[in-house]
Length: 296
Image (spheres, rainbow, N blue to C red):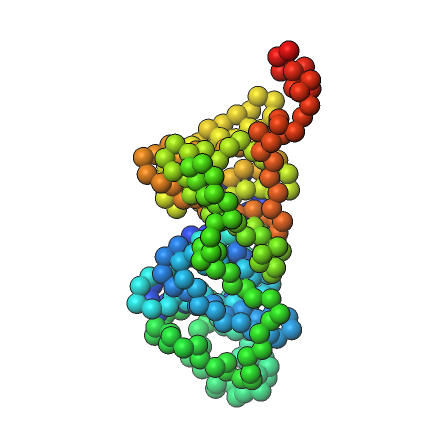
């Protein structure tokens, strides 16, 4: 779908009230998500058997390490919309394992023996992958676990990204950014929300340690990319469009519309790094610049 996106994959998912993305795990990628609209509840378990159930509002983020099983369900009476970012551009549903798909295809005697239950206990279970399960709207209070006390993991899977002040405010824009220095469990993904006023520019820069995946939430943007040896490209992105900048490629983001813009950006690294073209030039001796640009 986007051949250049070799390092990062993305999914736009919407759930209706009472709908759950069933229990599953991803064998080949970690999952980072940003909630755009509505409310979401998640439950995840780690290899130590510690579980965490969290409720998310717009502007909140979650992160699930690769292979950690989880579920996602819509909370309340309104639909929810969130963007999932995976730290592997070759992520696909073939690397996603669902609980109904597994139990539905395993021999019933084997499953019964595994759970020390009679085979009849599994009568009526789905025989194929459900993927989206439909039920009642979840209660506002988080129910108890099926068995045993809920033991929280040492690091939370939730971060309230837009609940705090932006980490950077500049002429014509502002930026929220969370990497593993602020959200310790998110060791392979950094997330950014970039707001730009009409005419504002996120200046020419590059990221030495990560690819960049972009999802336009609001506004109309011009994104440029420089790939060395005269390769230069300009793309115009609109709400719902996706852009991608390979690691180390120079680029810029400009709001060319008449309304404020908002873009979600994901990087496949837990530590954010960027070098601005203006800072690079400013950090060189004057004589070096004069020689390089033939401007004595």
